[in-house]
Image (cartoon, rainbow, N blue to C red):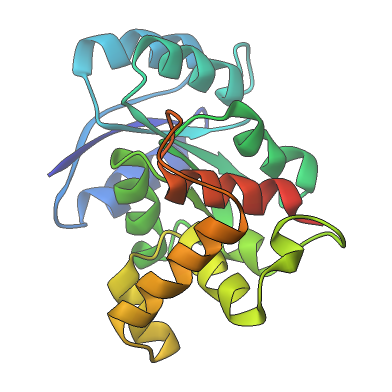
Length: 214
């Protein structure tokens, strides 16, 4: 059971999120608040595993600032930013944090229960997960590290960015799980990623993918 705190200033949308998420098995809504300050306070009291927060809360701090404050106080707490924006300057914020446990979900995608669960479970596990609509619009910039990957490696990496685990990637691409593992290890080698830093190579790979996107 993943405990989720909702942070949304629009009452109707907040109620819709409570109802829709509350109907999903293995999710528990521990609270719903309307601004960043309330979110910072609530995380200390309610101890959610994941905070689902709108970027634009209509007051200061906004969702990005509140999210960074929460992650500073609770590094292991997952953070999902809800946004209406696909623009690169918003999406690239995730990569600039160099932190695990962040997801970026478009508001139009909240009705896609499977995608939302991937984002929530991914953030709870310390992964970085991007909205599939955002990922589908990405392509590596010419000369970037990820541009040197093979088309199949780029396809696997894009699915990692969407929050798919190895088994789901194998099912979607009609590959064996071992083949997927081999592709992922090749991606790590090509991008010179390892276990030496604070971030898992899977997180490093997705952050690199976001930074390299056009």
